[in-house]
Amino acid sequence: MLATIREWRNSLVPINRVPSEVLSLISTHLSREKDILFASSVCRHWRRTFIQHAELWSRLNLKTGRNGHLVKMLLERAKGSALDVRSTFLDCVNILALVSPHAQRLRSLDFSFDYWPNIQKFSKAISGPLPLLRTLEINAVDTMGPPSLPLFSGAVNLKNFSLRSEGVPFLNYFAFPNLTTFEFSTVGEEFLISQLLNFLEASPTLQMVRMKIEAEVLRSDVHPERVIVLPNVEIFSITEGIPSHRVAPIAPYIFCPSVRRMALVREHDFGAPMSREIFPAWNTINPQYMASTIDEVTLGITTTGDELVSSSLSFLSPGPAALELGYMITGDEDPDELTFRLGWKYTNVFEHALKAIRTYPLLNNIKRLRIWGTHHLANTRQLTSMADEVTGLFKFLGPLEELVLDINNLRLFLSTFFDHPGSQVSTEQSTFPLIKGLIIADQPNDLDEECVVAIAGFARSQYMRSVPFERVVFRTRSPPAGMAERLEPWVGAVHFSEETISRDDRGVI
Image (cartoon, rainbow, N blue to C red; front, side, top):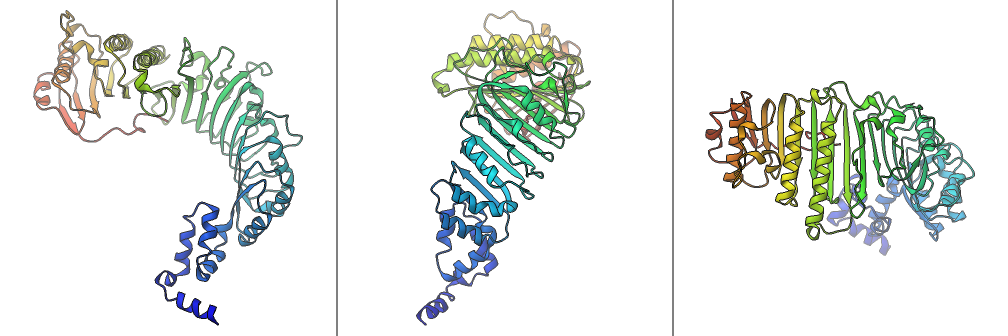
């Protein structure tokens, strides 16, 4: 009787007068299992509401030592809902026995930091059809021997597969004929490319492939002329974590006729020596990724973010296709303490990027060149070296529709036009080609008088060479005072806009 009275009194509390369908939404914002259990113990009204919400109990976190009664209760409360299971170092036969009768309800499986034998035990326990399983994530942390059986063979409708492995990844033990997304990362001493190629070839419905290889890629068992076709892949990226003379390029073995974005990225530690060719040579790239016409080249290079130096070089065709070459220098070092050394590495990456542009087989087709990025490392000598590389680049470029300078130091491109004490350089001798539109964007600070003079000198130089700018656009919130008047004699039109350039506009994947 007292319990009934208390329940009646509690029903008058404002929070308990909220409709059940609204109250149940509270639980959807609770990510931890402990919080969900606490919320269902607030009162009888909350308990009834939450227990009736079967989807709330469909997330299972399994590991050795887990209370079997709790797992059984969660499975009962989930009723017929699809299950999302995360397993960590689970080798408990009793827990697996509780889950196995519900295998056909599995929607996602996440093996976070687990051993291959445990993963194999789980696969064996749920053997049979897995009609609802759409996502499988595996992070294997050991280098033990291969499984004895194919893994998760009943997941014929799997769409998303993520595999991260230390040691041999055992890709030949997986086969998912309807896979659409594949993310793959491997760390180890050796990795046979045949395993990867065979897996990809057996997944004809793939639409996105992202891979990071931190191992020696060996191709001794692959015919040099072998090429597999992935007809539906639109996004394809490969990151080489440890560049080495023994690494076999993977891209030439793969043909993606529908690709929109192809990325080849190299990454190495700050303390390691830089390779002579930090961007892939063109003869190591499948010719299909080099479109017959390239409208735009975008170079992004920066020293901000998690990487010490990050460079992205994109070649965009008139259609949606794009080829991106990337290079990253990573490490735990503090950039503020490595200014001089990191500055020269930044300079080296910049020079290699410009060399990659110069040697691109279809350079004469380029219509737009975009440069974006920020750095605070280059000293006067480094800036001079980089400016010389820029001058050399423009000797190879034909007429440009647009030159976009979205960088925090315009001296990289306008060094010739800055007033250097004792300089005898004539601006009329600059090597810039015909450029219809110059866009100067997103300057972090107001342009000082020296920059204003240099921009005007650039415009005057183009005019004197009979290749004047049709337009100069400043995409900045603080246009320099008097800029339009200084440029007016030398250009067709001057525009100011506060619109910034997004990362998508820069062609970055």
